Length: 449
Image (tube, rainbow, N blue to C red; front, top):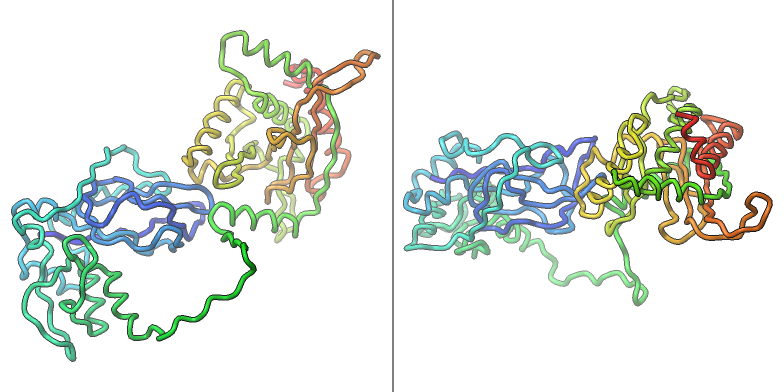
């Protein structure tokens, strides 16, 4: 017989308590394999696919695309063993009622143990399972037999003869609690299967107002975009940063001609290709080794500056879903080639929506390359609770005095925003000047190693 398993939204880690449904990957009535992703959700950290630990027939989905669910709320129910039952071992009414009598959709049994039990929070499962989908179809009435049960009469509800197309004990219990006769409902699931949504609609129908309230008037053409998911989290962090942090920004122009020449020579060697952003990342880690006061955060409750031993370097990346800041962990231990490879991996993951919550948390300093947007300067808002951010503008040919003569050089504007609580202008200016010196003469970076 089929045993219905309810799969709830798991704890996605990093203190996350809710997630928004971005896209359903399965339909009601489809057969799913163990650990097959069933839904794509967006948390405050990233967009992830959530695998289901049970294999069987999806009997219900909870929530529409765009809905926000709390951790622990139902995502899907799966009839474990129903696809094998449909092939020739239909569950009879007595078996279904026996499982319902306990009121527990996770009743023990051989089929009920089907499942990996190993949904890795926020990251999918360790072993990829090939997608296997199949719409349940009626064959000689066997599928209908598998999902038909005899409903226990409810006091005050009319009684009718015959089976009811319902498989979920949750649906039957919900109907009993509200005194509904399931025989009076038309199921919207495959082959007339009655879903939880059908019962909820029937329960809500009598209380629905006769005339729907008129929608609030809004100016013509006005569009409202909900601040939720990644975008909402970014908005909250930026607003908090502005409220709490006394930030300041200093900037300087630098001649990046020699830095570009050094990069071209490195890439001509045939090794790992080095990006310009990786060069700036290497310069930042060297600068923080000289000015460790900047790799810090402020504990406002204890009124303490917390200086951090490791540099986890975040870098701003623009995606279709908005701004994200992937984190290169232990950046201070990586070579320039290693930094370039990790930045490339995280950038590709950001573009495809494959970043995990861990990829987006734990940063200590941020590198912001707004030059990719064709702008020279900016006064960025600190990525709370970090205390420092280096901004890099576009590198463009400009008139420049070089060796006492006017020449066309590749010039970049650098800005440095810092939390004035962790240091004064002398340290911030010293760090920025060091960065500029390394840009103008990469040999300075070699001397600092």
